Length: 377
Image 1 (cartoon, rainbow, N blue to C red):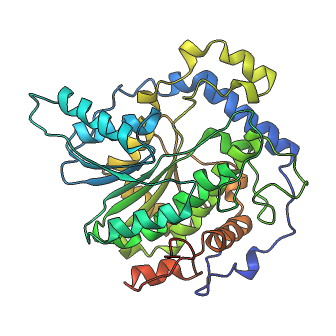
Image 2 (image 1 turned 135 degrees about the vertical axis):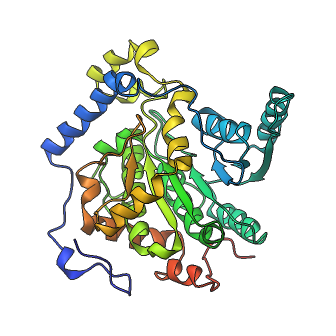
């Protein structure tokens, strides 16, 4: 497999005829995986405990985005109650403070005190993401785990754009976490060995990324919340795969994407009728938030994860590490293995989030990198 050049350009040997959409076999396969996971995820994960017991995490500092509800709340709570220093990176700081008070009450009498703090970030504003990263990096403190959990799936709603001009699924699920991950590299380097864990989705299996139409505004594809969501999740995997290649092994920063399984119960309205029928059996098939948090917690804390990531890197595997809802390594979609598109997603993403093409290398060297966003007006 080809690797990137020092200039960050796509290697010529990876160039192929531009692909315009998923093939029908790929599309059918993607829906098969989605339905299969819905029906059998509980059986596949039957070997896991709930909640998942964690290894010692007392020395870890973890940033968790979107941690006031759902999977993110469970991730933050379990890490905090196991002794980690948790930073809740959230838009609603009041809700986060109320959760901390509740966790402190719940932990009274336990030997491990809860060490949680709140920092505000709004992923619909790239300015906010830059300010958050600058505030954290200014501490010169180590960061051991960044969990990009926050995401949106606006079921059945019309296409909406952020104030930065980007389709909201694309910005919240892909652009903002990509920007945050890169800007926090100096802190992750201080915390090495460290990890970036992106909470992804099985729905990336039906996603397709057109790097010339990331906002889905050209008319080539009709927008739906499913298109916006699945495409943004596929873009996240592709970007993570190239970030893995750009990070030298000696940096000690592992990059993973995880599938929490099918956890949300309000996605049925935007799915085909066959899948909607399966949702009638939700009480048995669909995971709770606590169950959905297991794969992210595993990726964030299991001691063998860095070794697995190093092995994939050494083998020049085309995609980053991907952990399924049953906490086992698996492969993402066939389209996620498209190296040509992955390099294009990398370059287009850096352009959209206002970073230079050599941002990763410069940040790891301790240089200052200017972002187009977050500048004082």
